[in-house]
Image (tube, rainbow, N blue to C red; front, side):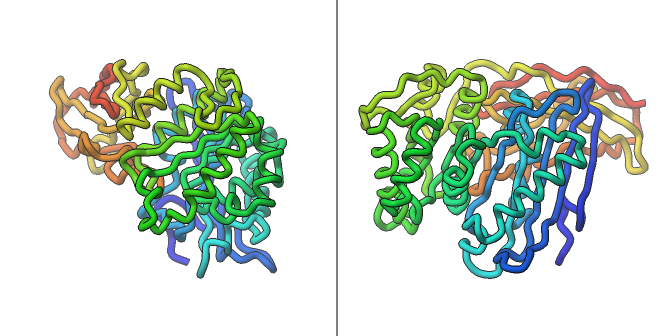
Length: 395
């Protein structure tokens, strides 16, 4: 097996000091056992603050395409998803299953993926010295085959799940009346978000197969007073793109204890957790994006130290949940020096909801031999700029 850029073969622990917080990143490879149908499973887990008990585990499950962390690294390194986990004292956990053939070699929990997940949870709980991680409730995000896996995990572990967001998929589950009946009983009181791309509603789309099953499940849940919200992304087909703006803010409402929207049996009206999310839903449904009016709340942090090649600059960013991250700006000696980011019209994420390549760096090396002072700012999706970090000077 080829080595990957983000993990070692076997367990890896790392910790970095960010101001008064200690963040930890753990990686693990779980090999298959007899009867398992995946080749191997890679898990990445990020914990924001070692001083606070974990209240939940956000499980971010990719779709059917074989995992390719070189092109689509796990979102444990994504500042936007990290901001959600940090706010709610949650671990951020990403499974990546590698298979030889078809999606059902992992997205059926009986294929071994359920067993691998529990193995990873127990391992991370032990190595992080956070025993609560093993039994903490789940927040499930799934894309395509990951949605199918998440729906099945809800029926298998209904008391473990706090909320779920499905980005496409589930046609093999929601297309089966028996599964819908079982799922409906379990999930009608569970805050759920269904996000589908508008172009998936077109019969020529290869993903049209999930359109009517999703709508059928949605209507049945709504008829039972279910807490389910449906969002149609007007700019997308099956890719995740900017749909994280809905999922992250939906989870924020639920985890904040603000999901007080009153259930109604009007199937034409999506359930909304609160008025704040309802406003975001209306804007996203029209534009396929958000344009936040307020600048980011938190200034980034920046550190600098000498290394053999020059000055190593490292940063931490906590973007607003409704604004995300579009660009990072490095200032040297009071002037804009480097901008790292994506274009104004680019999506905040890849089609699989990974961090865009330009925004994956958490550090930069200045090879200048002169003495300089540095600050850092960042831009959200609307172009709003954060306050600057504290200035650092080397030497």
